[in-house]
Amino acid sequence: MAALTDRLLRALERFNAAHPWDHNAHYHRWILRQLPRRVDRALDVGCGSGDLARLLAGRATAVRAVDADPAIVARARALTAPVAPVSFDVADALADTGDDGDYAAVTCVATLHHLPLAPALQRFRDRLAPGGTLVVLGLSRPDTVGDHLLGLLAIPLNAATGWLRNRGRPAPRPVAMTAATRDAEETLAEITLVARRVLPGARIRRRLYWRYTLVWRKPAPNS
Image (cartoon, rainbow, N blue to C red; front, side, top):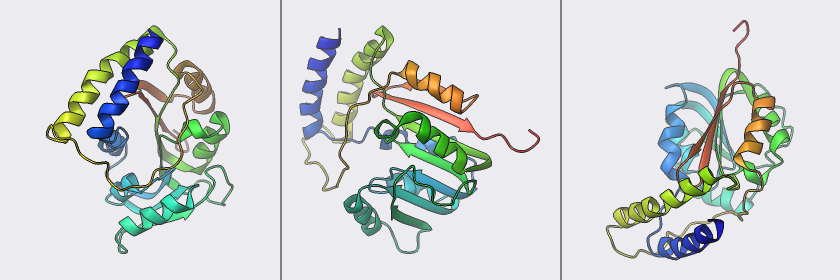
């Protein structure tokens, strides 16, 4: 089954090159629904070109967006209106910057698999203010029959979405910079084991389009 999935994914990559759409952006509105309507400060880790950070600015007092790639941070700044309450910084996601407990919301999209899992989750946990919310959209290594079946199901849905969004016409990819990517190493079971140790009560779900979600709310005092 894995070999068949790999062949289909290669064919899908060729199709997506002609009918591109963003799997991560597909979940941005879902991420916003996990947060209160208004929050104080928000942190977006691995912000890329800033799409989610700009959406967060619609409900946060201030948004700090960080990425390790200077070129993509420059791109994010160029795409963002100067009046938006968003600051983009070149920063190590795990660095101690003295902002522990500062954020009502921390988001991380398609970045966690680039970081050491347990230290990254611990760092996100520490940066949250009591009562704050962590939302992760991540990638895991397919391992179970269920993983591969969901991946197979996603292939025709992915192609249909690309076709509809591009109105059936081949389209060039937008001129946008993306950071270097690599495949996920941990399975969803491994991620879940670590997450539930570091973030007791975290809600983890397998999702379409080769993604999973993790939502955790930091306990408030006396809760």
